[in-house]
Length: 195
Image (cartoon, rainbow, N blue to C red; front, side, top):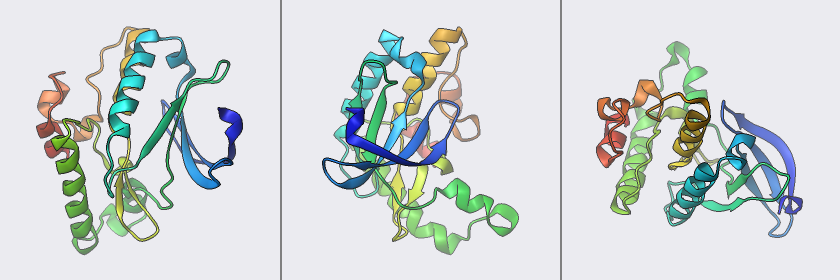
């Protein structure tokens, strides 16, 4: 449970989750913990979706995809996901700190190849990312790309939409395909459009 992990620092924070760097005291290694909104704990449909997406995402084993370890549902604690810790920044952060907010193609070319390999692998496993964007593209200390958040962001958005009564096609508007914006069933071509 949660007592196994010692929280060290916040790695990222969004509208729907907070990601912490933690130390796994049992395995003695760093991990990332994604704490989910407390509302998900009270939404049985969201928890079922989250269990299903975590199970599907755990099956993905690829050098350019962030490895999902487990979903923790301890009484009295918001649910959280344990995953591989990536020790570098995301592309959104890197781009924001560049002159003219542009990353050079020489830097991006190998990352685009790595991302295409990760997507090809996931699509062969019948898994669509649904929220491909620079903030979900992490670099490790060796500047290898790691794609994060397969399907998990959609589950959180769907839960919040159900609770608020709002409709949301899922994904990030600037990067989603027209079909995804029209709430069509997710397909590999949506990820290709986002790429």
